[in-house]
Length: 180
Image (tube, rainbow, N blue to C red; front, side, top):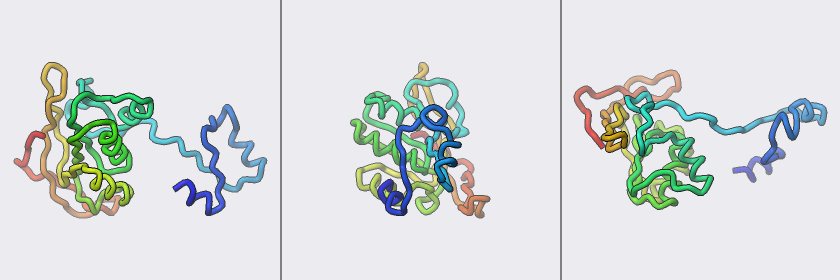
């Protein structure tokens, strides 16, 4: 992807600490007409799920998981991993999990594959690598015993009318709760 951007005539500078190594004003003086600062996601989005702020062992955000993987760690124990979400961070998590030794990697997403915001190539490659996708499923509550995650209570969803993003809005199917 970076090479494609370069072919369009853009210059990419990696590892630059903006404000320390260089100031944005410096680029303007150098004649740059546009500047994009890509710093990544500093924090994870909330799942809006009961128990996510309890500090249970075996639960962490995707951003933390990826930071720890990048630092050479295996952030969680076991062979099974469940990732919640449908964007690129979720795809990075499931694919990194497989590469770090997890053998049963699952992803739940509250809409269908067609509504996933992740790059379609990332989704396809995750499927090819063995990730199990569960669509129209949303988290409700983290199940834990003695401070450790033992499961995730979910409910099934169906798609309603489009929301502000243009994607069909997920609607809970009452009485469809189950535990993964």
